[in-house]
Amino acid sequence: MTPGSADPRRAPVAAGGAAPAPLLVLALGNTLLRDDGVGQAIAERIADDVARLGGRAELLDGGTQGMALLGRLEGRAAVLMLDAVARGAPPGSVHLLDGRELLDSPRPRGT
Figure 1 (cartoon, rainbow, N blue to C red):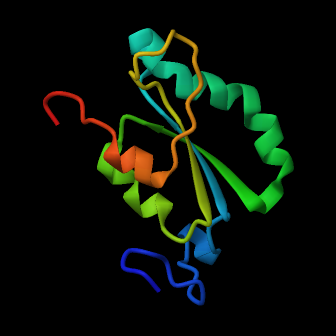
Figure 2 (spheres, helix red, strand yellow; figure 1 turned 30 degrees about the horizontal axis):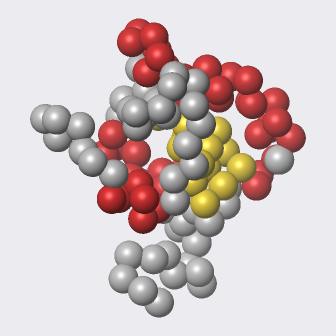
């Protein structure tokens, strides 16, 4: 096992004693700041699709909770984050970033 990876033999226990769904679809942003609420807008559109996956996926509105969400990532096979990013592309562009690209992305000023 590499440092920082989850031990596949030990699924963390979520609230209520059940293991978390393997896929977390995490909507991020602030709906009060218009385009920064794109994560929530997408989440609303796909909520029925995620629900049809049953216990295999969970949809979570993470808002602007930042680091407070870290515990919700534990024990997941995958996390799909829905958020607005500034990458110099036209508005509405879709970007797929893997973990390394996300970690290597420039940080916004003040963080």
